[in-house]
Image 1: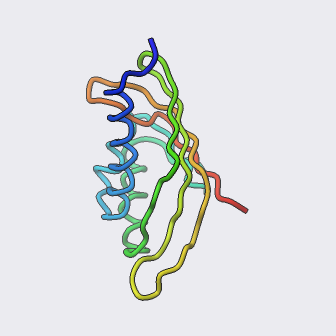
Image 2: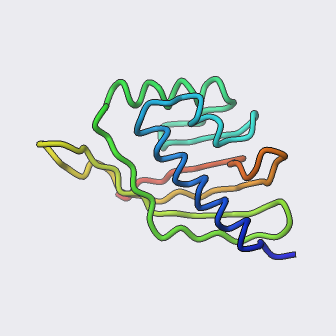
Length: 128
């Protein structure tokens, strides 16, 4: 059965929670966007599991507290409890020294869990 409107709305909310969590340094909320054995590649190598993903989310904010992530053109397709998605990223430094620092695209695998939709795999490819 194709994804329902409720599924699509929940997945859109997942994408927003992900960006809000990393931009505020909330490592627990950031890793909570993934299944416990989830895999994330921010373009620098695989990060696996909640603990490592949470640490990445917390440390990224500490190193660049004014970094902001905007995901655009989110496209999700799937059936049942499995989906794939993609989104373009504009990453920038906010504040007086506003500057775009990265653009690229996420490719995602998602699954519907008892707690809602989560990423099983999220791979980022920066534009060259």
